[in-house]
Image (cartoon, rainbow, N blue to C red; front, side, top):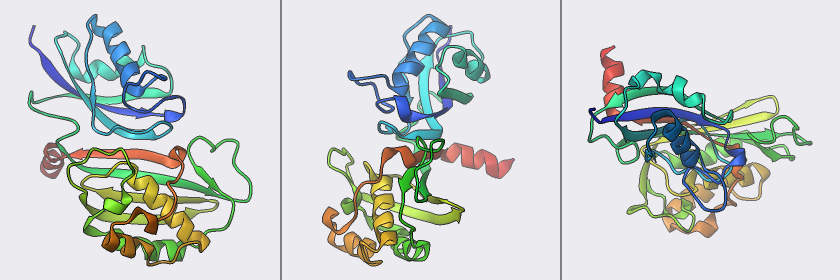
Length: 256
């Protein structure tokens, strides 16, 4: 039987997991997918994700690929795998891709969303998917500070210790901050992100919104490349990997 490379789109609530990547200290998204694939195909299948999300981080559009020899049609994998996966992990799409495709190294763009519950009291319902900030934030100051992120920069100051990136230069081409009632939503799109980069951006902007940091701190950190010029790392629970993009899918969309 011919081997196929399959690309999945995966959503998950990361609350109960140690992150995407397999670890010895608790369940991971990768491990749960591999266990479901073994039950579905009768063989061990290694799954490679586009982003190694941390413990407590969520995803709407994580992408992952695997190689398998199976009679299961590619488009049927969501139905097959969701029978075996826990309810907080869902495969939402699947397709066959070329044998040289790589979910992580060929990602052309990513969109992250960070949600803040900005209210005096924490939410019993939203506690797992938002970061609670009780003091009213100044969104105008946050937006003004974030403008410095746009463009191609050395984001060394925005990388937490432990990252393995070969270069800290990244391009951010979109940032938006919106408020709807008590919820503030940050969205940031770029060609790639460093370890904890979006959570450092969110934590810094929260400090700007508090008045703890001035509006020029992001521009200053891009110049100094000093992590100490920025704010704290925001909690993982507010972060969502919303979308991972590939050039071949962009080309397909343009020709549709």
